[in-house]
Image 1 (cartoon, rainbow, N blue to C red):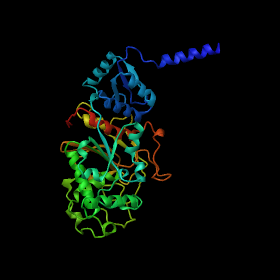
Image 2: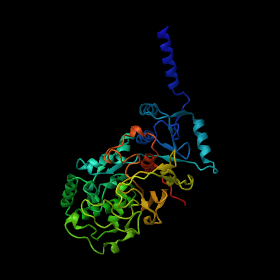
Image 3: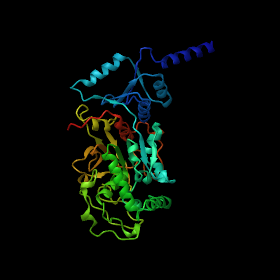
Image 4: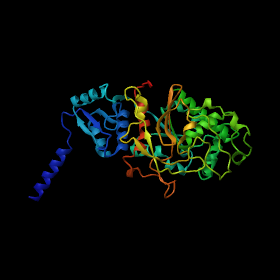
Length: 422
């Protein structure tokens, strides 16, 4: 009797897990019913990698995904712990019709090709322990989305056009080694000096400028750039300071140009203008670079507030709508070497997609044929306690709204291109 009962329970469980024969589509909800928001992006990416289309349902149940049903998709969802619903052709068409209604702020965007992803990181050439806390590296790994590493040499060799999507994180493109020995190890510094010497640059700052210009060229040529933390700030500083020595003797043995501030050219930057460089405080002084950073001179500031995502028109402004898809629109703030962006330093040409009470957190813009997003802060779930070098365990944060913004950017290049209309 006991064995028979066990068999019946097992049979009922199997029936409950079975997908109906009429199911032709898989709906991956991204609202509060989703069991793992972050890994859901990995499912979408894998489907694209397998040369299948994904429909991104903007503003529908938190920005859900819909795709053709295959046994492989079903298996991947189950193995990765991602919630899904098997639906029929008629149900899928009903959803499309609902989203096409001009009176609702929803739309369907077709994703067609998996972007080739690279991450700029000193981990390419050495241990670079601090890179273990790079939020994008962590979430790509957690979501099981493949990527490659590049560093200065790959940029200088002109390899970037081979890829679609480039990420920059906790980097310093000004040649000041993060303005603080706590940011980069002696091994990291030596690796940069060796590359500079190999390519004929007398100083690391000159080499980093060439790298910054290579990144700008990649974006202008049609690439997609996503930068967080100090990388967003120092990239623009380096570009604005082209031909100007902004590096003090603490870092390269000679003094900075006393008129450096007046010589900055803000027309060369991506997102920022009207900013003031921070004065030098020595090799172990403050780690801030300029007043772009709203937390300047406070180091790794840990805010206790929230920032808000703007609500864009899915039908008229598909690009920012994709980049802000979330199950929450109020997101807790998080610290970083560059925590957030001072409003007065953000160019009018930059589209603000998320802002706090006193600063902008999430920006979008276009550069030539390409597009870029800058996101303030280091780790959306990072905390000061226990040391800022400790990597976050994303198993504890499968519903992180802050990390979802990163993954929106990963899928965005796969969309059929639509220009902003406002």
